[in-house]
Image (cartoon, rainbow, N blue to C red; front, side):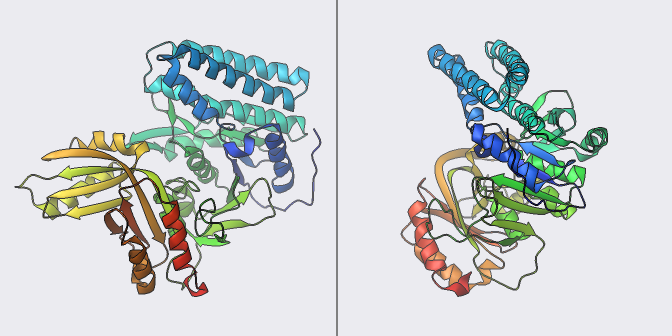
Amino acid sequence: MNIVITEKTKYNHRQLHKFGGSSLTNVQGYRMVANIMANYSKSGDLVVVSAAGTTTNKLINWINYSHTNHIVANKLLKSISNYQQELIDGLLPNNKSKILKMAFLKDLKKLNNLINKSINNDIYSEIVGHGEIWSARLMSAVLENAGLSSYWLDARLFLRTEFIGQPKIDENLSRPLLQHFLQKYPNKWLVITGFIAQNKQGRMVLLGRNGSDYSATQIGALAKVNKVTIWSDVTGIYNADPRKVKDASLLPILGFNEANELARLSTPVLHPRTLQPLAINNIDLQLKCSYNPEQGSTKIGHFFTQDTGVKIITSHEDICLIELYLMNRQNFFQTYKNINLFLNKNQILPLATGLNSDKKLIQLCYTSEIANASLNLLQQVQLEKIVLRHHFAIIAIIGSDIIKNSINTHLFYQQLKDQPVEFIWHSNKGISLVAVLHTTKTSNLVRLLHQSLFRNKQYY
C-alpha cells in the first residue's frame, strides 16, 4: 500500500484521532485513514475506531433474528463474515491477511456459540461489541503494512466502568491501566477500540450507541492529550443539519457551553457525554471530514463571545415521554425537586421537562435508547402512576442567552404556532429553547426555522 506524505504538522504532545464507521466502510476508507495518520499525526498518537460501516447494526439484527428466523440470521452471519474477510483480503498481503482471518473466524465461532444460548445483557454486549475489535485489529495491521509502527489495544484491558443509570468510566481505576500501555508502547500508533469497556466483574460493557466518541474523549483525558480530533463523513458542526437544510453554514468555532448543549440534546454529530472529559481537562476538540481534511472544520473550546442569539437549530425524531402522575397528597414542586435530585444522582436527566401542576403531571423527555432504562429506575419513586409514550420529536434552538433574545424567541414561537406542540422548555442556563412535538417528522420545520432565524446575518 502506498502512503502519500505531505508536510506534517509539528506537535509537542500526544494527540488522539477518532474515526467513525463511515470512515471505515470499505478498503478505500481504511487506506484513507492510513493516509490521514501519515499526514496529520505522529508516532505515539492514539487512534480510536468504531465498527466498520454498518457492522454494529448487522450484529444487532443477527441477535434479533437468531431465535425467530434462522434463515435471515444465517444470511446476516454470512454477510458479516464475507464483509470482514473481504476487507482483510483487500488491505493486506496474503501472509498477513491469513493471520487476521484466522483470528476473525475464531471470534465468529465463539460468537456463534454464544448466540445459540439465551440472550442476556452480557451475551448481547459481547456480540455487538466485536465490531470495534475487528476494526481496531485490522486498522493496526494496515498501519503496520504502510510502515507506521502500530499496536492494537482492546479498551477492555484498561477502561473500567461503573453503572449509574448508564455506563460511566471510572477514571481512578482506568488511568493507571492505560498509563501502563502508554509507557510500554511510547513510539507506536496505538489503535484502540471505541464503544466498549469492562465492568468490575470482568464483563464487556457497551457505552451506548455512538459511544465511541465518548470513549475517545475519555481516553484522551486519561492520556492527557492536548487535542482530540473526531474524523467523520461531515466537515464539522453546521447551524442546521445540512441533510435537511441545503444552505446550512459551517461553524468554524463553537464554545464548550453551546457544544455541550447540542450534545446533551442528542444530536447525531456529538454524543451526549463526548464533551464532559474535555471541558474538565481543558482539551480542545476538532471535528473534521476524513474524506476532505482541508475542507474546513469546527473547533470546540473555551471561547469568549459577546454574541447572544441563535447559533444552531437541532432536532431529534426518536423521542419518548415518561409521564409521572403525582398523588393528590404530594406537594407538586417539592416532589419535582426531589425527583430532579434522583434523576441527577442516577445520571438520567431528561432532554426537556414539562410541568403541569394542575394535572399533577411531570413529563420527562428521553431518546428511545435510554427511555426504558430511565423508566425502570423511576419505578422506585412513589407516584400515582407512570406512563411511557412514544412517537415524539424535539426541535431546539441553541445560543448564548438565547431566551433573552426577544427576536429569536418570537420567531421560534411563530413557526411553532401550527405544530402539534406537547410543551416548550428552556434550559436552566438559558442556552436553549426546546419544543417537544407529537410527531416524528421535523425536516420541513427545521428548514422554515432556518430561513426565518438566519435570514439576516445579525442573527448568526
